[in-house]
Amino acid sequence: MKRYHPLLVAFHWLVAIMVLVALVVGGPGLAELKNSDPQKLTALIGHMVWGMVIGGLMLAFLATRVFSRKPPYADAEHPTLKVGRKFTHVALYVLVLAMVSSGIGIALSADLFAIAFGGSEAPLPASFNDIPARTIHGIIATLLLLLIAFHLLGWAYHQFVLKDHLISRMWFGRRSS
Image (cartoon, rainbow, N blue to C red; front, side):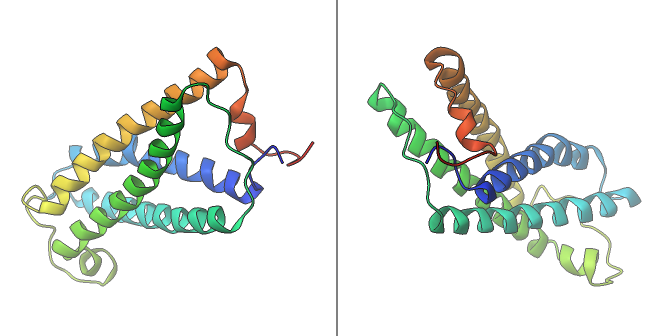
């Protein structure tokens, strides 16, 4: 078997794109809007739904990963690469789930579920910055962006230095030769 299960491939790319959009567009876009701006609630609702979908897809990805057959690990010439591979993937999974969890923590602390989905007429808090989960959310976002960059460096190393075309394993096609 040369490739990952097609469902894993689909989850991988969908979650990757959604996480990047949330990090690059969602976070900075929300930060630009003042909490008193009427558009902030609409943007928050979109960000919350997007984040919850990411969380659900990530859980489905992990379940599929546990229960599907996978190709053997790629040969890495150096033991550090093997450790890096394992660390990077586990850390990506943990950080994505931690990001979703801290977002839920912000929503619970600020009563956003009632405001956004429950018909509460309460205004948004003046600021989210005094909510500890918000600080954690920002730290995780930074760590996640750094880890994604590290992951892309690993891909580039495999693609352009080792020239082993490892990326083809995480794409659609016949699973065996």
